[in-house]
Image (tube, rainbow, N blue to C red; front, side, top):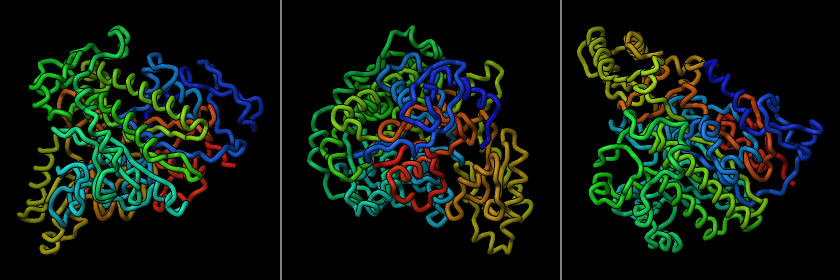
Length: 576
């Protein structure tokens, strides 16, 4: 894994605010008592086999969209004792967890968490990608063979059909002869669909616009369950819009963030300034932001997601019989807020303080209704970059990437070297897609064309490196950025040349931020196990997000997903 020295140093600073473990006996997990202190030594992994627990009735996998690891530590003084701080103190924190591939986007991240492998095997190489055969972009959850259930819009034509490997949920289904229930929930369709896998009982997502409804597709069933229809008719979307978005606490509590209304934020369409409070009762604001899409784009959506998740558990009777069930739960609002306002904004801080309340609400409900018989793991699908225009004011290395000139230079180079022709069919997701039929008709060597592109790309300011597809398929990269590029490369779906830009550079506007790189701000994410099987400890070994699925599967005693490349971290107990 590629880490800068600064990030490694930060890991040890985390001990000041996370729980550090003291053991009366190094083989006695149950005798652990938590201790907190700056000088406490980081805990090693304690053999989990010393703790036996009842099989959990419900596993909830929580994926927080765009949550960097340092959001656990940066805002810790403002978190309540019953939410994120609780699971950090009482659970197993694997603090050095990173994605081991690029690009770090929402679709690939959610798929990786639950398949135990990256795009090279599960096939979700981006949120959308260029399909050479169709000669157009395709979306990772798009499926024209299904129709929406609960919506007539195109947003209902979604399924996991493009996922090429099984998930934890699929494996649990097979293990229990399909007697376990598995359901995915997220504001974003891909956040609910991909984790639950191809055999899920249901996946639900939120359609905004003028609908404001939780929907699904005919991949799962022909009509929504009655309880979903009932939830949709409560008028909750309209109630939330009337609430708007104000700061949860007094503005003086947000001293970890930039001033409100700073130069690095993007206001909502129709608004003059990005400043609290946000009033969504204004018809003009609603119209210019696609009405109920404002719920998805703010913490309002996180509140509704928790409410819908609890209703799902109740109505579907999850965790009520001898067969373990799984709920895949994704909080999407954090990503929308990060994109619009950046990682140092008061909006982002408020979003995480409100996420903390949602975690607390969920835990309180579970403690009352499934006490001691649930397991939660919390992670993220990717992180987020600093806003370059902000950090540049402090003379930090960062920049804005516009591939347009580079692509034109590549086209000119290919025409000069191989003759006039439209060799480049598409450039997207930092990948060149070539017209193989044209190259074959000219009797050119595809490797020569790919190498010519690499050589030209490396001349471009802002590019760190580039790799040709033939190198990615014939060589084994074992360390650093090239390994991460290899892990994100799918031979049938990826491009002919992959480009990696410099650390701190983004392809985005000058306000707000994005993600996608192989660098720590995008790859370093939280990983916490809490509940049945988890002990209070801080684990400092290097871990991959791909390790989550085999860890859960080993704990449940089921086979890992069929394309899994991760390893069991050995941090959970054994089932009686």
